[in-house]
Image (cartoon, rainbow, N blue to C red; front, side, top):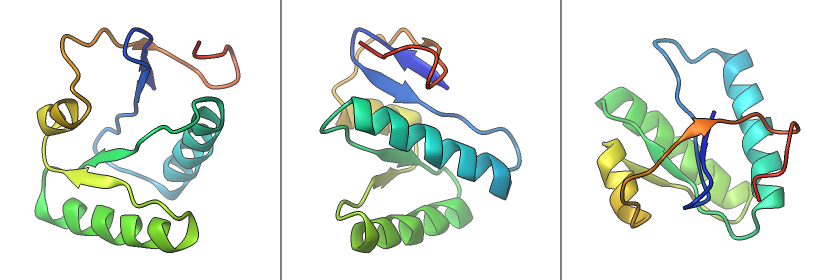
Length: 101
């Protein structure tokens, strides 16, 4: 996980395979982050068709269970544009080790 403290944006990236264990760890960490950062928006980047479909289904599930559906885009730049993020400076960040303030 990476955090841009100036813009208060958390960036979570996955390598080639997204395992159930990795997904569960990411969801837990993101929930902890959102609990600290009230009003945080979630944007999922899914460049290929298969992952885009999975992300949309996940978003629909989130909208019914959490009340807010994350946005799904195809590129990191599209996510930056939605956040009006210019020149981000992401640094390594671990939930629980420190507050993102």
